[in-house]
Image (cartoon, rainbow, N blue to C red; front, top):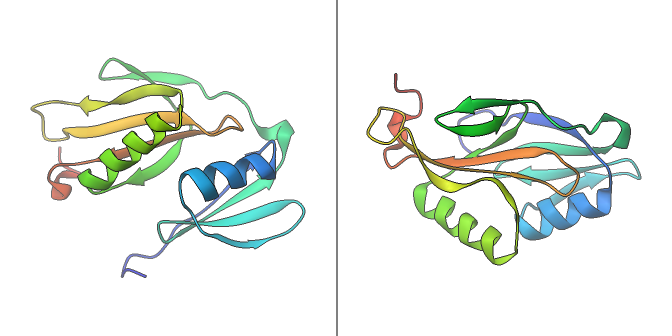
Length: 140
């Protein structure tokens, strides 16, 4: 584990089987503890917990960000650029439908980044991004 404290995120899903297929199989997140109502995943060293709560899953509002309709409620990872590209390729090969196709955003500006948005099979929005220069994560 890195020196950065891992975050913990609990989120609703409509099906634990679909959550396991998406987070465990497609994204490659090892499964931790589980019960009949929830399952833990190791999300690159962070603990995310899919809770079976279909009534809590709903579409997120969107805001315009550099010309893209970005879901306001989302979570994800900032990956090294090569890992981001490999994930984009894997998701495309799996036929994932993107909310925002993989591309560069804020080109030529301090926050230039590769980004993509998608929904898990239960409707939760995720963003995966990468910076050519990781030190620019919080650049203004």
